[in-house]
Image (cartoon, rainbow, N blue to C red; front, side, top):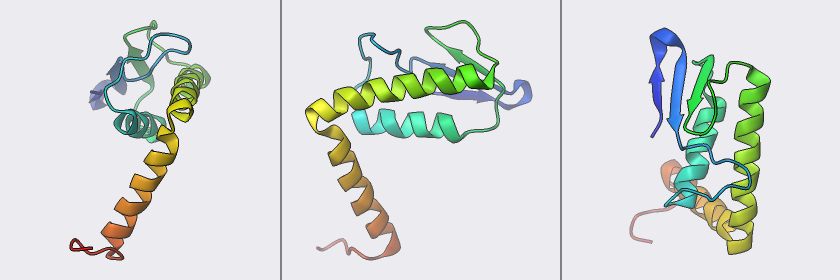
Length: 105
């Protein structure tokens, strides 16, 4: 769960961003990867608070910790074939939203 404090331009991610080479803490690979993508694309914060680091304010440090966590989890996901499953589910979802797939199919 991530909480954005708009007035303070602060994003609290708790343990949503995994630390490289640490024990992963997630229940659902797809949801974690989606959450990381949302954190990466959110430009409404200047301060990032995680459970594992001091407050981060340098954009390059923020990008680095997100990138490293994402790559670490992707490595684990590749071992388990989860990246491919995520791509398939995303493709089906996008096709469904466009109306290319009907519910009865």
